Image: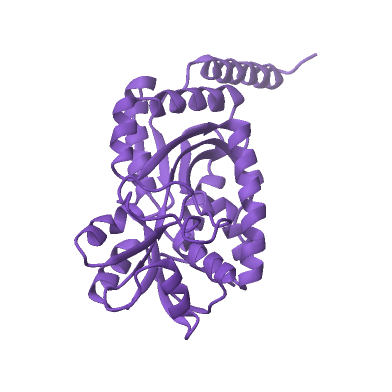
Length: 322
């Protein structure tokens, strides 16, 4: 004979199961979705995340909220999302270097690729090799010759960021020595470059293009394979004599691993629709942000390939954060 307590327990379990099933049957999303930006407000990938959130909200009839959690080259925001429930209500917007460089750069990274389901590589941006006008160089060749005479102190926006990676990659390729000076993001870095407190840097093109146009900094070359629409007069580093050089900064949207596949697939589809918007593409273009719109398995493969490439650079350059 089944006891009354056992019957009540079974009924309670059945009710809970029905409630869970009903909740699962309701379309996603049923409450606001948070996008954690693993960087400072105002950075290019923060702007991208906010633009995508603004478009996803009406498309999915739910609020998408953007929250910045900067620090440790993206590790703080990424760790937060990696440990969040895998239900589609906490997403991560981060630079690709968070996934492609940090696992090699940090002795004990707080996450790895297996902790994430990559929704999309949404866009890419370039960096520009800049020098202060007081430095008597006007080309990549002159810069390399100058740098070979004595180690140069250069600014970057944090360990593992594109500015750090770009200069270390370039100095390995060109054969000069450097002394990295880390900053907490690009805003103060750019102020000090313009003031001449520090003379060299690889910096987000959008952050320095106006200073270059107005003569406060000298732009020498662009890091990507194609020239930037913000500074079409500047050659790429590949054009300037280093054909194997390429540094393209990915902007990645990811979710915790284990997110229900239908939710991940829905997010992929909706994000690709958002990125196809001519309005958004034009808005991004004038900020040197190039739509990538690479989703799912293809995004994962590109991140893995980039990780393998930069792991070699990190090792060769002796880049390490304990």
